[in-house]
Image (cartoon, rainbow, N blue to C red; front, top):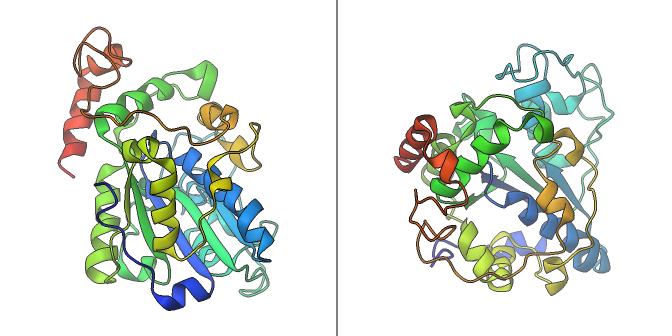
Length: 298
């Protein structure tokens, strides 16, 4: 049961503001998950007079686009550095705790951008905070996790990373696979911060969207509503940073129930590396095979 690690929320969490991060790896259906949270904010929470800020991969800003002392990737080396408060690790961390004003500049006062929404939810890639994963960095926020078997996520990442026409990317970087960092965050959150593990498996989510999302909302202290399971297709502000990567979620209409996967090679009838597999070509590439093997170690 993918929800066996789900924790019941503390009474205080259910009564006041929530600060939650969903850590994940690329190609794990996380953007559709985020869209469900957006739908909840626009429906059930709004009806209760509660506000939710939903942050879309904010730690990706310093990782890819921040000032040179913040950047960890050269993928967007040609892009000029950003200098707003969401372009630093510190600025993003403050936004998770207090909400944010995207237009606040780096030279502004420390408290001028605080707007204190009722709830803050962020979906982020674990590898974005590589080198910053420690107790101090992760304090003050509830950490939750969305996982997917690497035999599905890694080939999909490889394909997108090599699809210049769609995503603008032209090489695969094993450092963007992210399972090592996801495990590191999990270890700090559960062992050093003492948080109960809240882990969602992507296949379980698709097999039972209502059941899984209901348990997740209960675990983080926000109300569940069936309205969060469907939405109108179309672009979402903030997602334009990553053209091509979110097309499926942009064009989707909800979390649609699929038959539960019983084995990791369910995307083709020829086995995990069979010719009929959806990612048969990618699965034959040694770099992909090595990345999958490394990911399974975590």
